[in-house]
Amino acid sequence: MNDFQPVFDEPFESVSEELERLSIKLRDLLPDPSIGPEERLERLSRVVRRSVMTSAHHLTARTKLRRIRARLDELVPGEISYEAKINALLDELDRQVPNGEDLTIFQKLELIGDARLSDDGRFGLPHTLLNCIRGLYQEPISIAEKIERAVKELTRLRAGGE
Image (cartoon, rainbow, N blue to C red):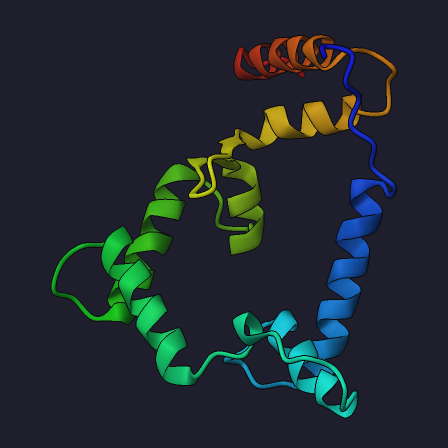
C-alpha cells in the first residue's frame, strides 16, 4: 500500500490553463455574471436535444441568492448587510496578507493557501506544502517520502530560507 503512486494523465499546469481557457470562452459567450462556467455549459447544451439537463448546474436566482446569504451568515455572523459581510472577509484577507497592496485578491488567496477541513472529509494543506507535494509527484518515490520532503521544504521556508 505504501508504494501507491497517483497517476495523473495531465500535468496540473495544463489542467489549470485549459480550465481557465474554457471558462473564459464560456463567459464570453454567455456573459451573465450570475452563473459560473458549468451552468453556462449547461445552458449551451440545450442545442443537443437528446442531452439530459444536469439540475445541479441549473439553479434559480432565488436558490443561488439563498445559498450565498446562508454561507455569508455562516462565515460572518451578525446583522450587517451582505455586502458588508463580503467586505469583512476582504478585510480579514488583508490582515492575513500584510503589505499585499500590489496583489490581486486571487494572488492573496493563493498566498494563504487553504488549510480548511472539507465537507466531504478531505483536508486542505497550506499552499506552500501543497505546491511542494505537487512538484514531487513526477519523481518515482513513495508518497511518504514525498510528504517528508515537502514538510522539510515547508519548515525551511517558514524559517526564512530561500
